[in-house]
Image 1 (spheres, protein in one colour):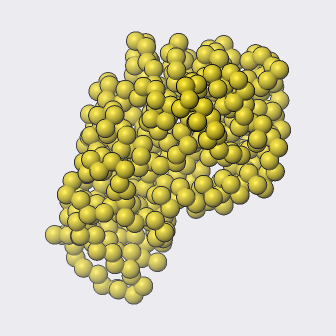
Image 2 (cartoon, protein in one colour; image 1 turned 45 degrees about the vertical axis):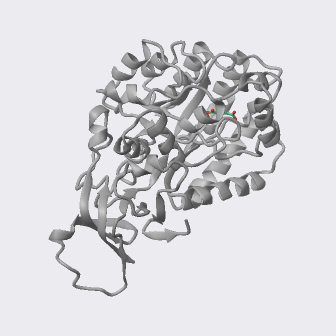
Image 3 (cartoon, helix red, strand yellow; image 1 turned 90 degrees about the vertical axis):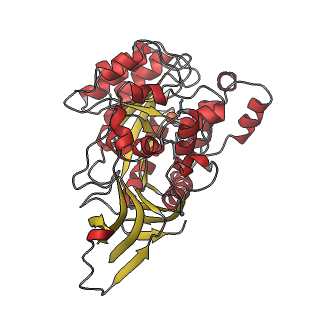
Length: 418
Ligand code: NIG
Ligand code: FE
C-alpha cells in the first residue's frame, strides 16, 4: 500500500521532526512546503520533498499516484473536545431559545444536561454505541483523524460507567486515536447538592472508572460546580494520576483558570469569558516540564448559543498555544464540524489561516497527547491527510465560509468517502 502525492501546491505542517506544538507568533509559521511531493507507505508518512528535487520512482508496483495540482495537503483535523456519546438531540430546546429562553433558564427547568441524562440513563448500551458509532463515521469522513470523547450525560455512577464502556468500545474499534475523558462533574443530579454529587463522584465513580480514562473533566460554572467542588475533583484525579481537561469560563470567569493551572491541567476549554488573572495564569504554565496548559476555544458553541467568542487573537498575541475544537454535543454545539470551527475562528477571532490550521491540528494533538501520531506531516506519523479543493491561497478556507475546503480525505493512507 503506497501512495505518492505529487505537484502539491502547499504541503502544510510538514516537518522532518515536528514540534510538539506551536505557541504565539510561531503559530503563523506552521510550515508550508511549496510545490511538494509526499510519499505514504503502509498507512504512514514515508517521505516528502519539493518537486524540483524529486528523484523519480524506481518501483511503480502497487503505487497509487495522486496529482494534487493547485491543491494543498493538510494534516487531518484533530478534535480534542467532544461529547460524541449522547442519547438524543435537543432540537426542541433550540426552538425554546429562539422563543427567548436562555441556555441557563432551559437548564434550570430540567432541560439541558439533565434532559440528556434522563434519555441516556434509559437507553441501552448497544443503542448508545450504535448512535455514537454513526457520528464517529461522519467525523472520519469529514477529515477528523483523532478524537477526544467525554462522559458527563450519565449523572449516576452506573450511567457514567455505561458511557465509559461505550467510549472504550469506540476506542478499540476506531481506526484513529481516541481519548476518553471522565466528565464526572457535568451537572448536579436532581435531588442532590453539588457537594453531595462531588463526594459520590470522588468516592464511587472515580475508583471504578480510573483504569479506563485518560482525563477527568468538570463543568466549573455558576449553577454547576464551583471552585471548591472542582478543586476536590482535580485533587482526586491527581491522586489517581489522571490529568485534567476542564470546562471553565463559559459564562462566568471566577478563578477556574488559575485553579486548573495550580492542578497542572492539560487544557482549559471554553474561555468565552476571561478576567485579568486568566492570561497570566495560562502564561505561567508555558515552561512546565509536562508542557503548557492549552487554551481550547470552541467557536461552534459561541455561534450556536450567541455568546462571546473566546478571544483567540488575544491568547495567541499573549504567546499562548491556542487550540480549536468542536465541542460536539446536543445542547450547546450540535455540530461536529472542525471545518466550521476553523472558519468561525478565522472570521470571528481574526486568526490567520495558518494559526487556525495549527490550532486545529498540531496544537490539538498536543492537547490530547497524540503528538507523534497525528497533527503534522512527518516521517512515521499516520497518513491522516486532507486534500483541499484547488485554491490560490489558504485564506480561501475562511473566505468561502460555509464551503468545504476539503476535497478528499485519507486516514491511515486509505481514502474515505467525503
Ligand atoms: O461544553 N458546558 C458544558 N457542557 C457542554 C454542553 C452540555 C450540554 O448542553 O449538553 C459544553 O458546552
Ligand atoms: Fe464541552
